[in-house]
Image: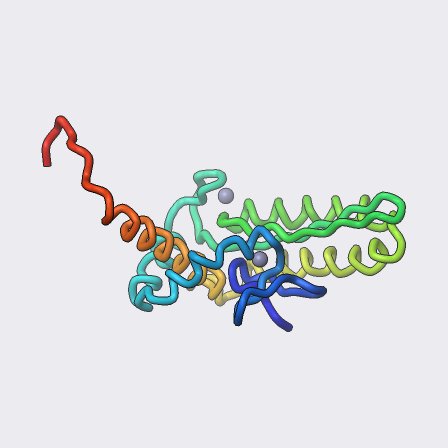
Length: 178
Ligand SMILES: [Zn+2]
Ligand SMILES: [Zn+2]
């Protein structure tokens, strides 16, 4: 199955394309320039940052890690209208567990009430959250996941782009001196 080149979410239906890149949503597709910049980042720099994030504190609750990218899934329906979405977030296992349970319960209650997509998407989104919940405790979690590495690469790409853009502008004078 194809997965989003920005957030790593698997793409079930549609998605959007930009050249050789695929995205789960317009929001993710807006990051094409960052992805292109991030391709030039060396592997060891990516590993270093991913390791730092993984060992660091949870950005959500401030608790201990391991921090990783956890994607929860949600669906809700109203009559003929059904809307589903995926929510990637950097957080610790305990925050991830809460998010999977919250979005799973939300989908179970509010997902069904649209025809036909409510009936199709509700079991899918509930199972994806259940899969995520089970995956939290995997032994492989003592190293950063590929999704986390991708995010680390993208944020290094963003820094690089900012540096390149800033290089054209003279540095501002600061009273503290160099
Ligand atoms: Zn995405
Ligand atoms: Zn947390």
